[in-house]
Image 1 (cartoon, rainbow, N blue to C red):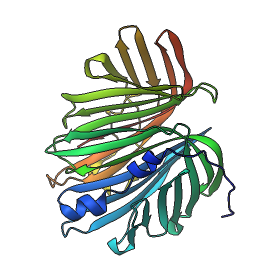
Image 2: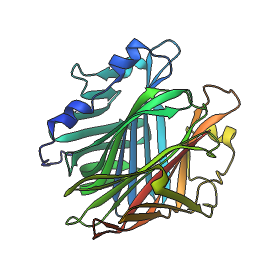
Image 3: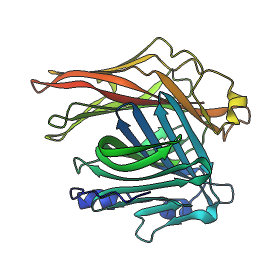
Image 4: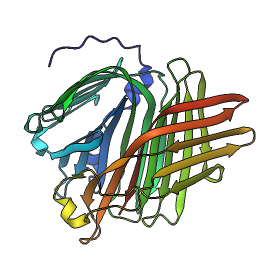
Length: 347
């Protein structure tokens, strides 16, 4: 792949220091149930890309690395590839994660992401520079009997190239999102989550919304929920718990475009009928109000065997589609049309 020339604005040093790989410190101290992943989303007209580099502590305490790539070009397609622990490396400064021929580095200019899965003809090199150097970190979220932590950068600018599905995509300042999760919990335990990222507005008035809701496994009880509204000219605005109303309408018909890893489709069966055809999140507080609606056209599934019940699996459904945001904050109208991705985790 030819080299790509890029420039990146300076990144606040505290993000470069804060978004480090935790596993060498935390998993080595107590590996039981430890998990960590770096997650990137890129939005380009007619195409979306998801890249996830993850670490899971095995029964012997060694970290098992995985790389997930999902791309939506009318339909979702992708791969989940597991690597030998010997193919994992973390730099001494904890700023670079290497899995086989795949690498994520966070530094003064942002994130440098290299994906190289030759068996699936998937290759890419991206530079992702935050358009705003601030980030949000949430700690000690309940996840069944465990806990997880979450750091996210709501909006980045992605430049580079990515080849998947026999096509090469060039990216030039494409909108992107990044988050980083770590903690100790077990897939299939009594928890679930809903998460969404919406990017809207033009280069002159960008607006990014990040939504999260932690629930029990049946999703009948909400443990916590929040909506973050992020604009470059104002600090992130947080709505939480009773200030939010979340409503799913209809069901996204048909089977998932793909299930990763493919053998899990035999266990899960065909459809996942609880993925809504439209997801609406409304937040109100005093004179402020925001409504975001995402209407996905298809979805993909990523499945993990349950760690608490041999007859179950934890399923993450990834859906994306056009989004609309309307709101008034401090007397100023915000929003516009954009693009949204949401994820549902249940088991």
